[in-house]
Image (cartoon, helix red, strand yellow):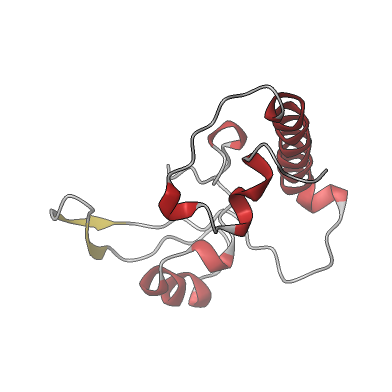
Length: 121
């Protein structure tokens, strides 16, 4: 069983169309729900060759996002946004009192200006 997720905590067997390998997509696109593909040869990340068989459990046609079909995606995105906000607030609290040395080569970098003592708030 192939589990997919950019975020490991939201493990799911749902794989978005844009994340499916092109060769697999061509096979899946012609399959009917509940059918099994013929063996497909592939080369793994380690360079070894193998075969895979795909069972198409379900297919969701393009649609507007809704809680019934897309709950896992909405939940994952909400968690990401919350974590980003908490992390940004944490950095802001500590920015003024944290010693950070920026190499002279990068002193002109606009993104790093907020970490210098003379940074405007």
